[in-house]
Image 1 (cartoon, rainbow, N blue to C red):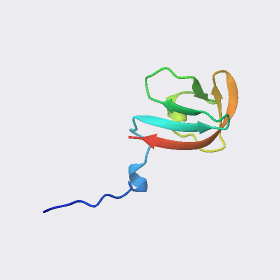
Image 2: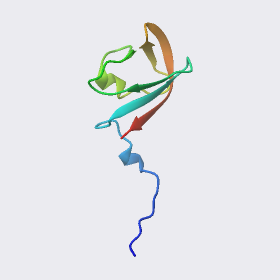
Image 3: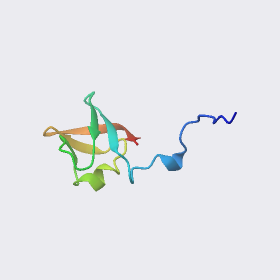
Image 4: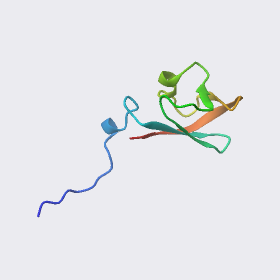
Amino acid sequence: MDSKTLSPPSVEDLTVKDCEAVLICLSTRRFVVARPGEPRDLWPIDGGWDKLRHLKPGDEVIYKGNVTTVRAVDVYR
């Protein structure tokens, strides 16, 4: 019997280059799921989706008209 060992994805697999969505935790205790091509209430201070994919903790974003800070970012594949 051939069985595969399950392991967490490697760092190389966790890129935002071709991700389905970016999960963003904000300092306002909100989690935002941002998908390319879909309307959203979250925008990086500097611009669109390409900038959104490069967010990191500590960056400021506009969420529903208010400036807030990113606490964590993860990729959904």
